[in-house]
Length: 279
Image (cartoon, rainbow, N blue to C red; front, top):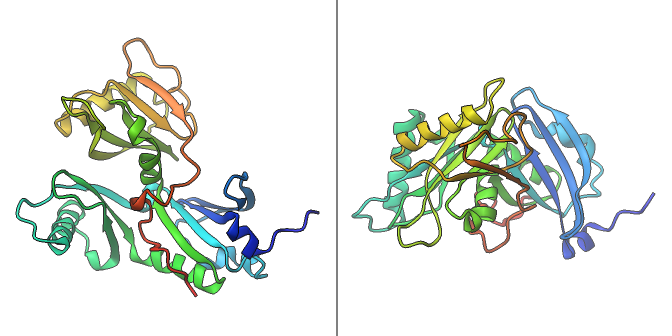
């Protein structure tokens, strides 16, 4: 058996632990270097709630202590929504207040139980994300207990958007996950340029969903948000049965694997970690 690299060397070479979390399952992998393929460490089923103890058998020996920890959350664990910036905003506090009000109007929940972050803008709608405070605390506890550096914590949609939005060429982005697609509905400026994210829509996939069904759903979503029908949809993730071969007249459906992780320049991908070491 090959002897694992010391955590300090793995960290120097750009290695990290990668945790992928959904309501139903989690996976933990070790990427020994920035360019290496991930090495699976754990694949576990969950009963809907994540608790740090489930990973104790994998991490308890301490041989991985000191490594950076990157966490990817399925979109069903968070709430993604767009916020229209106020015309009279005087600072970040005003923008945060508008984002909080938008969250309460959409979901009717007490924001004290959620952790809110956003990609603030004053000249266009911007994306906001709310994550349960309890889940955030559990991930901090995991990092603190096993002496890991929690550096990245991001929903799948945000990771895919950061990787793909400059290459959409007018297409919408669809991020396929278990039983659903998160749609990033875009609008291209009349004079050309990079597409702007105008809406995020979570689309549940019923049994037997096919390309014709998806076309109808896309038209309904476009109408709801006051957008033109998409000329194409770039679907990121594992191919879904029935959606790989579009029927005549259906928007083009193309599959592409997302970038393995965001880069330091993609600031919004660092939603909650803040680069601070836990523990």
